[in-house]
Length: 191
Image (cartoon, rainbow, N blue to C red; front, side, top):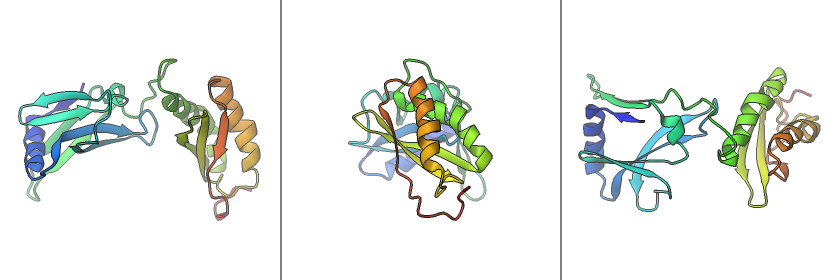
């Protein structure tokens, strides 16, 4: 699991002592299991905590770990090193970008796995990419195209014949996909 060194615990506890309404820190990963994964530490205030967060006490420091991020935080290290400029907090999460999905993984993780491991490598040949923005309550994946796909004249065909077909074949619980990209900017369009 996550190791928070004594120096990091002291540094974070000192920061927290200056916050009136902070309960502790919350550790999570944005876009876990994707090349864009980013490990984050934020102040945990009332209303920030989510159901399923795992609470751990480290002396003066209380930390909550996002339940969805936990598998990606395995072997993570939070450290603080003093230097002549003050110091630096570092977070190393070697598993943050590794796809760890199975049939029981959240739908968002499974969609991202297919996008980043199957769809985007094909789109990269044209300088494009696609990412998941949201999943609607009625089962549609809301996507955003970038790079050579933004403004491309073939994006509708790519969306329906490529991206949607691939996702629906592997994730039959999806109803379809929707594109939220502003295609009026054609400056990088492939076609």
